[in-house]
Image (cartoon, rainbow, N blue to C red; front, side):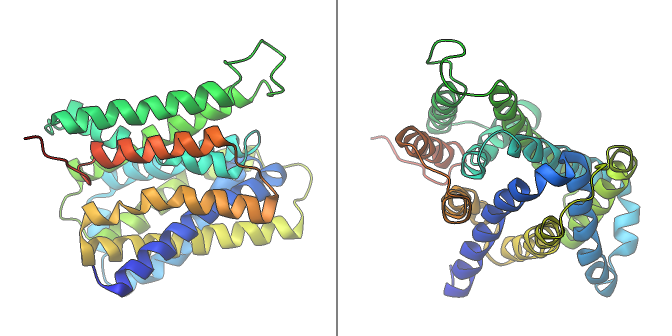
Length: 298
């Protein structure tokens, strides 16, 4: 991998790690649905001119059903779920759960598309989900007496929202592989954000906050939609073209590092030993489950 590609991979991880920070900072003022609608709307406005410049608009329209499905499953639903989780848990923890995306992707690809799972990949799935169970057990207070752990009642639902979001990411990735193979990535990126914007327009109008959001929250949404979503998608698909999808997905391993870092620097979030340990277990399991690391037995 060229040094420029490595730099772009790390930059992408930093941007996607920062998205959890901006969701946390804007969720209270906008709410999950309105914030997500603005996010995907700004991403659409960023990607649409590039789509038209590349003359991929006709391709997007030809595959609009599959692209709309991917937009709802891969953007609208998980973005709302993560923003809802941001109301109850910190940004660093949400980013750690994001590392489970390849686990769901591998499991769904095996169950739906018939992808083969070697013994090492099965072991990776077991290790990865064990790390998730460890983290969930600690963060939801299951290891303490009821109402004595200091954990809010919404924490468990927030954790489930994060896991539901990564499950949607896994479904979206396999839908893309199944129905959109060969479609230009820019058409998929722009079309998915446009379809997510359309799907969330009416719910966002209905659930628009009664109290006007602060100007600072508008600024966070602007960065989240334009930079962390629109431009980040362009970087991601550029990496897929340059280094291949297998290496590009390695960004998933780096996102929690930046998610925890930004949360600590800008929000004063603390990182527990359990959180670091569980993150390490999840990353090791994911590396095995996705075949990124494939030890050989004698």
